[in-house]
Length: 219
Image (cartoon, rainbow, N blue to C red; front, top):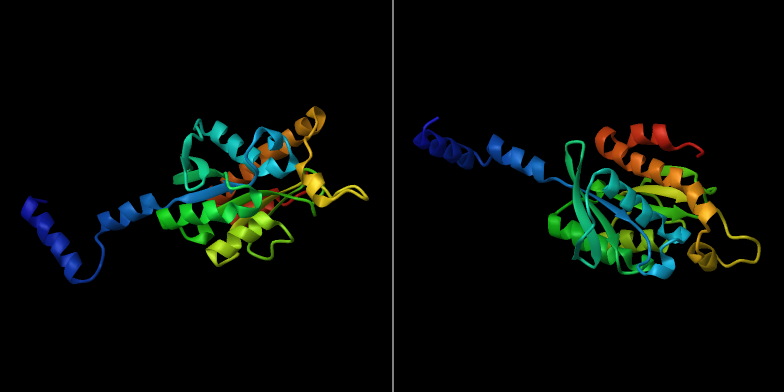
């Protein structure tokens, strides 16, 4: 098509109030996913159960050959491609209970809807290393998830939950989630961290329902 023909084609689409195929394709290419792993910044929290979300995002970055080296939106993030989709991997640096400040800023800047957000976090109501995927619902007392739902104005995002088990009798929940995992414990979680990363990939490439069928099993 000649230059005049291309101009006329764009004019026809504009008059009809429709987008050209090229414009639609460009929008599809720009539609991203966001995968937010929850945790706390600082070396003292690095190996705690509360930082499982960070570990899963780091595993995803490693498997995709990417670096999490950009600092903006109160987080550390990087961009990868999973399947055909561009994906932002982010570790909020706001501390766990204020994770929504980072996540809502990224979604707002890139104009990404909540249904294309995957939040990875630890879960005390699941047995250690057990994996569960779901969309929406309550926060079950998880203040990071609560913060994200509050700042987005909706709970309708995907959660990938990695069980760390309940506190021992007499132990406070806060102490339980923040205690440092020993070498043997961390090694035991390694396979679950990899499975959680695979589950995230499955949500993006195959859809949530199929991913749930594959990964909502006892580890």
